[in-house]
Image (cartoon, rainbow, N blue to C red; front, side, top):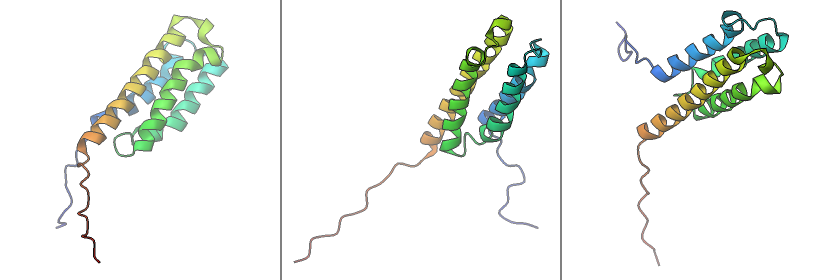
Length: 130
């Protein structure tokens, strides 16, 4: 029998929520009816491939939380930057909501990580020796 390994590891709800959001972003052009835009489809697939693997690490790595927040910011701006916002409200509102949600999840993961970290204690000073 293996000792020391937890047979039921703790699930991270923030990482699961981030992964679910990335999955929704990936399928949103087809699900919401704006898959006729090559820019929208390419942006969503590239977003999923670039941010998806990083998003599941938001609670474990501070850099992943920052990267996911930046990706969420890009997701908010991408309908206008790539020119598919004119396809309708569903095209830009889905990205706006998902991007803002990813930023919020990243901030929550950052704050949760800071709350788990033990406070720093200063090392004792050595007495001066003549």
